[in-house]
Amino acid sequence: MRRRGFTLIELLVVIAIIAVLIALLLPAVQAAREAARRAQCVNNLKQIGLATHNYISVNNVFPLGDLYPSGSNQTGVNGIKANGNSTYSYGWTLSIAPQMEQQAVFNAYNFCFSFSDATGSTATNSTVTYNQLASLLCPSENSSGRPQAPYATLSYVGNIGGPGAIRIFSGTIVSPTFKTGAFASGVSPNNTIGVESVTDGLSNTAMFSERLTGVPDNAAVFRSDTNNARRAMFQSGANATINSNDVTGAMAVLNGCKALPPTAKAVTSYRNGQIWIIAHPWATVFNRYNHLGTPNTISCDSSSTVGTVNGAGQGGALATVPPTSNHSGGVNMALADGSVRFIKDSVALNSWWALGTRDGGEVISADAY
Image (tube, rainbow, N blue to C red; front, side, top):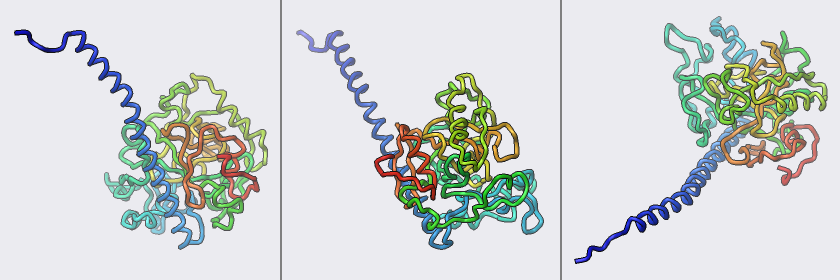
């Protein structure tokens, strides 16, 4: 009796067909998963935008990017000083926690201590600082681990403004007035701002975007490292003058960053989103970004001077610190009216700068971005 079955050739053909089908199906599955992650990212930004408007309705101002020179830094209300972190305060993330249905997190933070103060081996505010809020982490983030474990990280960043050489703190999530030390040099006081300050229009002004979290050792990252270069901070080798209205100076910083060779090495161990609650006027790596370089380009500081407005690897007033993401072709952005738009990497530079300022008087149409 003759047995029926597949010949070896038929079996190989079937296997080949299945392999082709899998190869065709896998990208579609991956695309569907990324679409879902991007939709969740949009939802996260909408929640942050809504929480910010609820904060504004209570306080009549936008949340500040940092609380320097107060806000659990320097000497606290009980004479307690942060252990070596006297210039770092908390920022907008903690301020809007109650409006994000995280009242318990806000209540758990002891404002008499900094993020890192400890009693013995126990960090005073570890209940808050180690707690990862899902709504502050982009689901498309694929970096393994926290950039500064055990501290929780942050994927979303506030708009500090356009190029610092033109005008610093011209965005919506700004810093308070500076009165002393190096921070007062050349800096125009801002105080707090409300929606009435956004004369360019809430729908034409950026409020929040996203940024890839840092890697444990930025100093081991090279310009040619396509996987991690956008997560690090480099040195542009160019300088400008803050608040000088100098477009040429701003472009010098930007072009210096673009011209870095592939062998250029990241200059600091400071990491994007390394601790979700902390903030500093010039350390945009923590919780803010600016509108100098367009989305998904690399970040560069303009100077190596530590402790000045230049930042020294932390993203100073003259740095280019763009938003970055794993979304194909661009980044999600929450505008000041609470809406969320997808901004392409190819956005025109003048449109990108215009989105960053709250009262620059630029004319920009919705189809420009």
